Amino acid sequence: MYAIFQSGGKQYEAKPGTVVKVEKLPGEIGDQVVLDEVLLAADGDEVQIGQPVVQDVVIQGRIVEQNRYRKIIVFKHKRRKDYRKKQGHRQHYTAVLIEAINKQGAQQTETASAEL
Image (cartoon, rainbow, N blue to C red; front, side, top):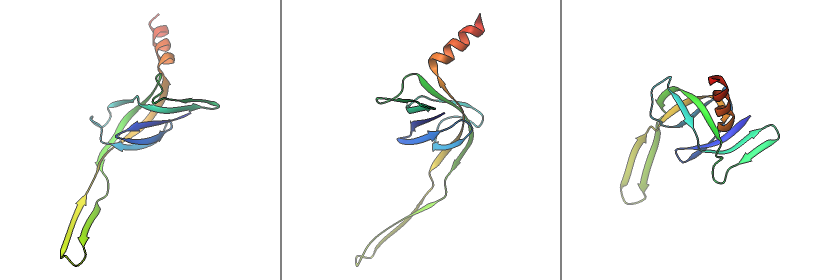
């Protein structure tokens, strides 16, 4: 089973047990994260495509790292004008361990049967 989700204006592929680096999310290491902007969910031959999102599928994960990427150099210049500008940038990211891809309807029935 896998899913394509959107976070921070970018799209990522999620499979249970993998770590995905997404744009910075609020939270501490070890916190639970629910990603609900699922664009596509596939389980074997069954594929659900959202328009724009799949309503009944959520991705559950856990924050494993809050860090920054390597520095990139931004260098601008204009020839023959004596203009040079050098900047560096490090983008923040959150590493999320994907634990499960759940259908909300199935999750609600599991909790309802556990309460009985």
